[in-house]
Length: 428
Image: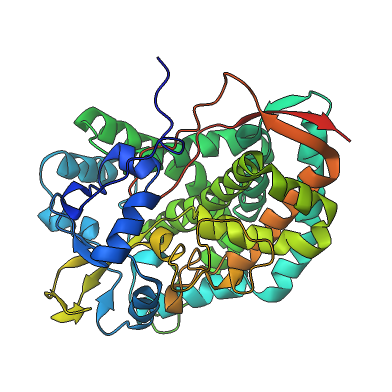
C-alpha cells in the first residue's frame, strides 16, 4: 500500500495534548497543527523536545529584531561537551577533515556583522543584477532540455540544477560536478534528520569530509590567484577587527551551510513547491499563464509564504524573559516557526489560499527578518521568477503523473523538502 499523503489527509489535532511537532507525519503537513497552536497556545513548549514553539507573526517580528534577548548560538558547536555518537563524529572531523566553525546563521554580533559584511559584498545589488541574464538563460536552457519529452521529474530537471549550477559557479566548482555536490548537500541534510543511527551519523560526516577535500585545493588556489567569484571574496577578504582572513575551518562551514544549503537547497525546494501548488490549483495556473507579467512576482512570494523552504529556526534566550506572558528562562531554546507565522490570519487574509493579488505577499518571513534576513533573497527571487517564467513560456498545460507521486517530504524539523515531483505536460 502506498504511504498516506498527509497533504491530502493531514493530521488535525483536536486539542493541545495531541500536538506533536516532532512527529514525522505531522511535519508532512504541519499546517493544521500550526493553526491550533497559533489559536490556543502561540507560545507552546513541546513536551518531547522542551523547545518553545512560537507561531504568531507579530511575535516573531519582535523576536527577530531583538538581538539583546535572543541569540543564534547553537549548542552543537559546544564541542567539549559532546558525548556518544556526536563525540565520535567530532573526532572523525579532527582526524580526517576540518572541524567546522559556526555558520553565519549561528553567529551573533559582533562576529555575525563582520562575516555578514563579506557576504554582503559578494551579494551586492550590482552583482545580482549582472547575474540576472545568466539566470534567465540557464532557466530556459534547462526547460528546453526536457520540453520535448512530455514528462519529467521537475525536481531533478529544473529545481535542483538551476540554483545549484549558479552557486557552484560562484564557488569555483565545475558544472560537471553539480550532482556530486548535490549528494554531499543531501548527506549533510540527512545527517541532521530524525532518529539517526550512529552509522548514519558517521556516513553523513564522511560525505561532508569528502566535500571538504574537494574544496580545500580551490581555497588554496584562490589565495594565490584571486578571481571575481563569491568564493574568492570569502577566501581573501581581510577582516580588520580579527587581523586575518577566514580560516579553512570557517570557510568549510560557510561553504556547506551558508552557500549550498542556504543558497541552493532552499531555492530548489521553493521551485518544487511552486510547481506542486500550480498542479493542485489549476485556476491559479490559468490566471498566471494568462498574464505572467502581472502576477508572477506575487506568485513567487506566495510560494515562499505558503510552503516556506525553511519552516523554522531556533533562538536561545540570553536572559530570563517572557512571550505573551509565558516565562522563558535564560538558556531556553525557542523555535521561530516561520511556516506558521506566514499563515497567520491576523496578518494575511485567507492565509491558506494562493492570492495572486495579495497586497502584502512580500511581508512573509520566508527569508527571516532583522539582522539575519537572508542575504541571498534577491538572488533567490530572481531564480524563482525565471524558473517559473521559463516553465510558463514553454508549457501549455501540465498535470501530476498518475501513479508516480506520493508527494512526500523528507523528514526534517526545519526544512521542507519535496523529494520528487513527476509531471506530464503538453508543450506550447
